[in-house]
Length: 295
Length: 298
Image (cartoon, rainbow over all chains, first blue to last red; front, side, top):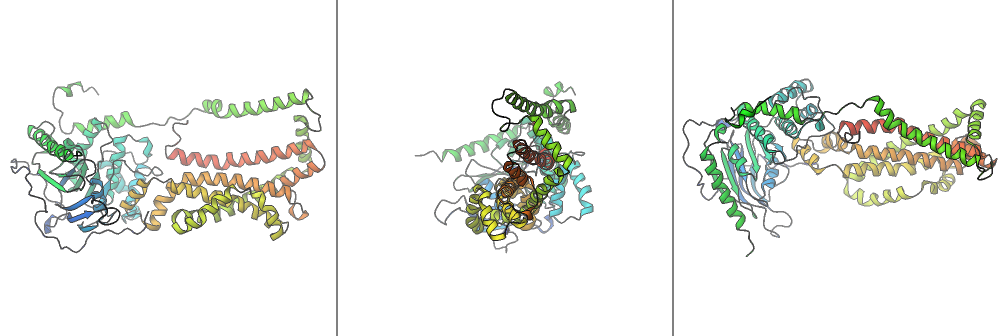
């Protein structure tokens, strides 16, 4: 572990404003009436994005030695927006989240995340087994500078929020997989930032638990007006959750295409439009994968 | 909760809360308390049976006169040696002399070995320089240090402590290094996203995560302390040293008192096991149980 964490956030803004440098965003232009998604987040007033990536490139090893993992990614996430990143293996989804979380630095380009340090959730819950469920959340609060007397009540509130009131004293191993991810979500929220980065957080869960958590994350995203950047390889999940789906190509990772999804979350499970979108995105994803057949 | 109808009609939005609560109830692991009767049957009975078996075999070998009584005295003779010591009033002082030396030496070894271990585990150049030395020292029998310690420090307590430290510090340091190395990188990443970097990272994430490995190192460190001390007491002889267990054992050998020799060995064994059972085992069990690492074993 390197002790000095450099966060390339709040870098001087030199990227052009406007739509990110994606080769046109075909998406779905129609916006269904009466499906007002919450567009207002914490910092919506000044019109700045909650997360801005400008021409971000990331290569590992010597510069120029290998193809970059991420190549010229530009992406804006508006405050309060829920964006899913979809892509096959090797598209650098997780690398991208690490960069936004400040765990790693881009080789070139800038990343701006105004506000508090973004929270990151992993596929594995990554809860600390030496602490109770509540202890994990209180540690996050403590590291975020919350004074001691406020930690316990705030942890209880966050556990209530993820419907785990009364689980404060539970040990991590006493919780089911779904409960652990909810505690991990509460711990991420405890960091106090409005930006939540999720790295396939539900991939290891069974289908029913995942369904429940999809509803939960949608509810909490609305209630807390979070900005969510959610990585998954599951297109149905992406369509179910997101306002915008971004498809990344593989090796190098580039923004290949974007879709805007203007459907109420509650109806997506049965909606024909959602099914169409899922098929369309899946077709493009398969196309991206086919490009890598050895000639 | 009967919910067969949900198959026919699409579930309402807030139904997921109910399903979630049901899943929680179904999937949560409840660690059952083990009844005391079972603890007795599974944890206490087997070692007692084992001890009885060994005693029986010993008595049998004695009764059959497999060898002369001066080579193999009866269990009763060893018991007699123990009661003799008790009535002379020296039993407690002999055991305490060694136990005090062993424990205080061990605590000093913890105080020295812990920072060394942390330094070697976290600082790359230090690790490259000291890592192999520490592993090498750990495999070096600390008895080998007795002659050197006697020449440097003379035959007194400081030589005893030097031998204990040379035996125990490497194990404690190596245990901590292993503990730190085995910390899952995910915990460190999670800690960093929470803002636990530098010293705060060490305090809130790295050290607690490394605790099981560190405890294993401490346990081994105690075993090494005790062994080194007994070896040192056996070899070094001086009135300044007082009568400890090792010295008692060697004295009985000089008197060709086999019952006394066996008693000495038994006492050394009992002290080693008692410290392990009374000090380390409860701490280790608590730490592992809190982390859910003992559930399957119980």
